[in-house]
Each structure stands twice: as C-alpha cells, then as structure tokens.
Length: 77
Image 1 (cartoon, rainbow, N blue to C red):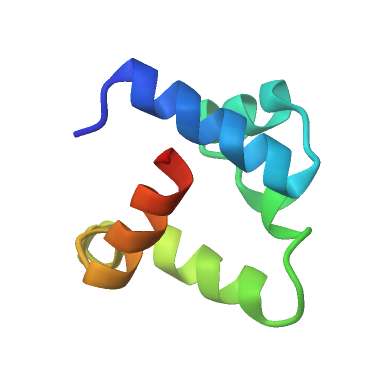
Image 2: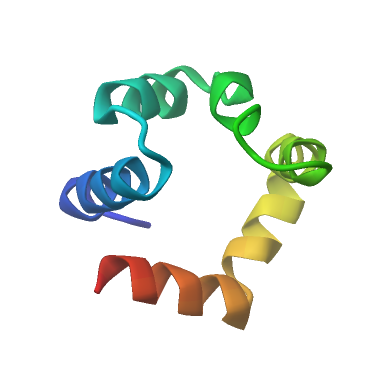
C-alpha cells in the first residue's frame, strides 16, 4: 500500500500531466468522485476506467499488472 508521500507525489504528477489542480484531483480521490476527472479522457477511455474503478478485484488486478507497475514507476521517477 502506498504511503502518504507516494500518494502526494502521484497526485502532483497527475496534476501536471492533466493540467488539473492538485486540489481537484485530491478531492476526487478522497471522495471517490472520479467522474469529473474521467470526463477529461478521450473517447471510450472514461467508460473503461469507470468500469475498472468500480470493481475492486479488477482494479487490484490491474494495479498489480507489470504494465501498471511500470507506469507507476515512471510517474514516481
């Protein structure tokens, strides 16, 4: 599980990449209100992410995949 410093770093990097204020991302994450952020995704990606985030087992499986770990590692620097 990520510690608070890692979460803060991820939020900061995500903010930079999306051009979205950190406070908006933090609010969405803490309140489990992803729709505002997901609406910024292109095409069918928002629906796909909503399905993934809505299923804890799928989300866990995704986050443990080598591809997701590589992306997280790249974001974390």
